[in-house]
Image 1 (spheres, rainbow, N blue to C red):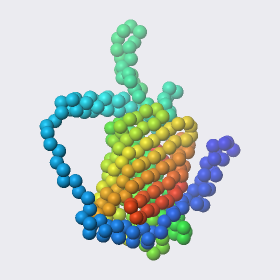
Image 2 (image 1 turned 135 degrees about the vertical axis):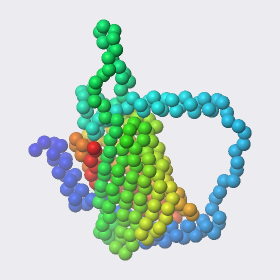
Image 3 (image 1 turned 60 degrees about the vertical axis):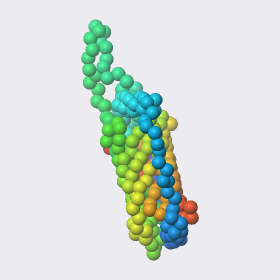
Length: 275
């Protein structure tokens, strides 16, 4: 039995036997959220009534146009491997590649098109289990990736239960890359955010996502952002350590959600599939 197969079996056993641990007082979290919302509503919350004046700045407009042009040109050259550390060609990078030359110059000086297959999209479906400290089950699923080099889905669902109360957290929106390189990428996301079950809230979410593929078979994922509802806001941090085997991944991670007075933290272990 090879080394990678042994690592896979050990991690799979850990996933099945202890697929996640949630550290949270779910009922206390709900009570804290409701109290903070009441306090914010009674105080009127915070609002910014200031108005910006003056016309447009030509220099700022020029910088904006240049930035957009560089963003379009940079991401337009990107293509992806079928999965991290699964290159189609020997010269391909860990996951993200750039086709800087769409045309080759033949020895006789004539241009000819490169007929090399390029993959300009990918999807990653993830699923993880969770257990509360009282051994009550929970779960999460997500769909992330790229429809093309410029944007892709960022959809996440999590259910948390303590045996008497259940909280459903759903976010759905788009992820737009800012930088895509060999070893890392950075993007920002904008989503609708929905709480269900013991809390019924509708709002929005946004932030940044960092991904890194430093060395085979490991990659890293980090999300920093927040949720905003009518009378309350939450900070959100999510991180994962991934181990890749072809287009299959096992990961462990932390998901942390907190307002001024309420917080939830959970440790997840799950699997992902690239397609």
